Length: 319
Image (cartoon, rainbow, N blue to C red; front, side):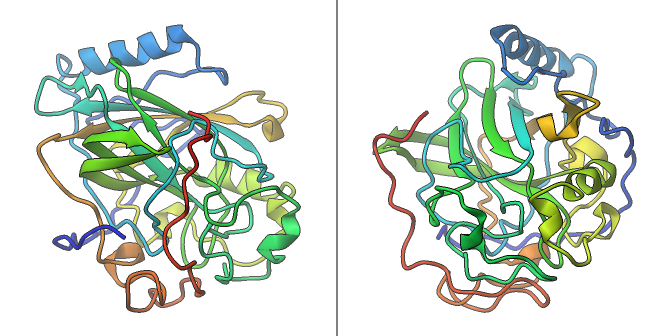
């Protein structure tokens, strides 16, 4: 686990703008729309958006929040993190900008993400109860490694852009649909993972309710029954649209949402700052589950035992 940090109190605010799967928060420009294949033209457009945002006065430093109770060190450097997990495809395009330097792209920034599967289970914590009624994690028929699925790093090039291929996350009590994210700088790829440096930003990415609910009505998500927490009722989401981590989502096929979505966002960071988000559970009100760094999970959150130690990276992981 990462080292402790000064706790960040999370406040609640209503979302400033939610609608149609495309959201722009006050005072921030989201990344341009992209296609599912992440073309070079898309990367250039994202870089252009980053370099011009400062001149329009719309560059925003993202506020760090808790890393949550399900973090594991040693995620693999790779673009595709699905490992055979079933779900609606999600193509993430994340641009990292330096808010202290005219919002220029941060070359070499390592973006790390992790999230639950379609039924609310996290790799490394597969005995945790996601709330409601869901099949056992092992019943999904995937070829996933139960210590590494839906976790990974990508390292930004000169345009500050990273891309991930994953699935839409499910949900677990008491949280809304979300993805965890950290931005690291100063380290390097080693033995299939990313080592050294420091964490500049710890946050979470969110999904508008309309999109999330439409996905949860599909298989395999629909096999998880129970009460989904709406975005505005979530204990971590502060509001603010994109500046609060709300993704801009575009369906790949508007008539067939099962074909998946492209999600984009710009993360404004201070490369000199350090905030790893450790030391608190979801919403800043708890600790990781037993065996995962000490303490107990927040009230109402899933419970279960993590594996002993971090996942074992392999040099053959795809990048």
